[in-house]
Image (cartoon, rainbow, N blue to C red; front, side, top):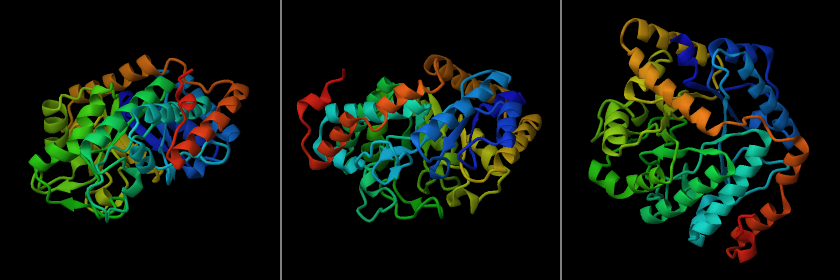
Length: 369
């Protein structure tokens, strides 16, 4: 059971190479994946080497499963891959073009660059509906203020990432587009009711689910009229009832970073992972506090032993992880470095990005060859 719990964690690492201690932690605990940030990235060659290092640990784990290697690569101001990689415009710019062909091609090209260096999971697209102009947290990360527009373009982005061999993860369920508070710092509390969510915020999620989406990320927001006790990430009402039962979503649910202020200022380090699994999440994301994954593993193991968490639920989440990895991550290592360099920052990608920014994309840039 302990080995299965490890597969339910995606963790951050400290630097631009994998330390021996980090490798041993991944191997010993059968950890499911790693998430990369700016601190981990210097150049395409270095990211390629780092992802090679990370994937090499799988051969020594119990399950020998590929690791998820995730990143926030949305385009615009949320883009961890910079030097040497194509710089893509913000999603608001993409949304204004109102072209599924453009969105699909952008996502496919962006995914190809990630896949070339060994990144197989993108915490994107952002499918939040931008209904509050004062919401600087989301802002130009959103495709549109129109739910149907977000739904249409986001679905094309999902399909493009899938085509490139990268797993997309839609966020932030059930919608972060109306908030003012930054959940990195504190807990946003919204008075939105369920009818409003169904008519606006949930519309894009329903559409991207039909685009064969394999992963969705929860928001650290409390909707007090729907669940007065827990924020979404820790709420059975949102995850088990709304997402699983009402929306019939069968794939993986991942938390946003569990160390963000929205949760950390209201719940203990030991309580958060246990409650997140109780609520129905499959994968726990730990980005910046490097001692917290061990605390989480210990707390979850204790909760299983004390029968607070059922072994059946751990098995169900574990099986979802294993199934996706076996189905999608058949060749998890980065491509040959010479081939990778031909993809990263490719002139056609640069032309596409510039054309999207200019607001007019010639047809020759949209061929999928």
